[in-house]
Length: 225
Image 1: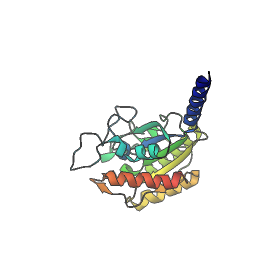
Image 2 (image 1 turned 30 degrees about the vertical axis):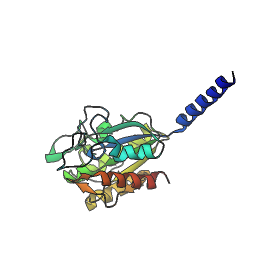
Image 3 (image 1 turned 45 degrees about the vertical axis):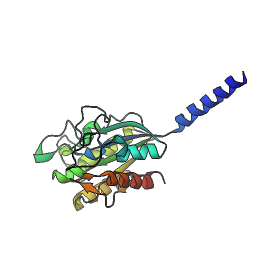
Image 4 (image 1 turned 90 degrees about the vertical axis):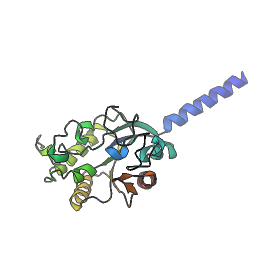
């Protein structure tokens, strides 16, 4: 009877500890992908176990920044909805319509997390998506093909859709001044903290193992103060 009582206490302690673990959702692009570990699983990916050494040395999901961040800090992953090459707005590379993969197209598919980390804007910069004007209400479908109004639409929608959730925008380094200034202006308008990444080690434009570790540490320093 005593053993049963002790086992029951241990079980309750285990359940309680897990219940207290905060959950994290990722809304991202190629930097946050890994084959077999994104949802939906048909999202385009960059990282996979079969390594192309000309592009990366990241060969395990455990080496990704988000997996490191979650496991190293006693958190749990709610969902990773990342899509390689995705832009925040609906204009992609060569002016193509990315409304099937943009951040604003995927922003409501993150489950019920305690923390949301948005790592985006890199492809808007690289694809030279239209920057647009700052607009904080009354968006038209056309507005969402430009970066600034799409950013505002995304953050306002997410604040309403995920009440009580901590939302952070993780901003890549080496982006254009227009993108950097726009992210800070729009995030400032909505009270969303920006995590400015610094000197991330990359190969073929994407984080290496070292770069992934750097992102994980910089996000930890900003989010888990």
